[in-house]
Amino acid sequence: MHAQRIVDDDLATRFAGGDEECLAVVYRRFRPLVHALASRSLADRGEAEDVTQAVFLAAWSGRDGFAPERGALSAWLMGITRRKVADALAARYRRTELAEAAASMVLARAARSAADPEATIDRLLVTTELAKLSRAQRRVLSLAFYGDLSHAQIADLTGWPLGTVKSHARRGLHRLAHCLREETGTANA
Image (cartoon, rainbow, N blue to C red; front, top):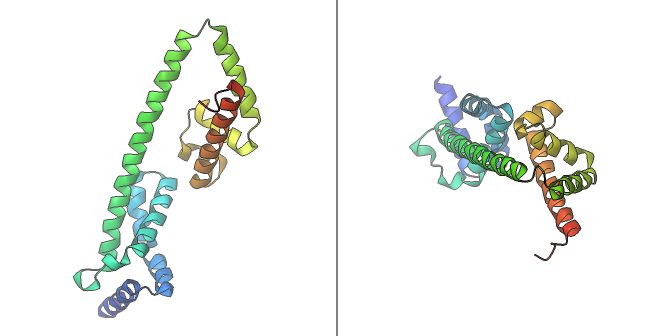
């Protein structure tokens, strides 16, 4: 046990000093611990992976704030993990609120325009513009809006990494909005 502490102390000192080779060792050594805490807290494999990556990026970029003489590297990493998990949970809550607000707006609009021929034209326009997106973007947006799936659920269903799903959704929505503005003549509005 004493030999392990000496190795940990040396690792912490090298990490704080900016030794890039040490970063790889720290990642291999503490990734399982960080990932386990993130997984237990978030109950979502994709989000836990994202948080794990964010922890090590934050630790490396903020290593000047780490003082090996004040505490163990593992404890410092756990503190960062707890903050990143809290950030992820807050973001999840915001996404849920936004999705619920959007769903309420869509339902209210649908109720108002059920007999409105313009609503039918709008739906046809959106369908036409969706067809112009890449296959991956169209699939992600269709699963999100028509299938009411979260990014994490889409990642599980497609087998794509969560970041890829989020990128397809973001780019697809951006392109769809741009196309719809052009089609409706509101590009300069």
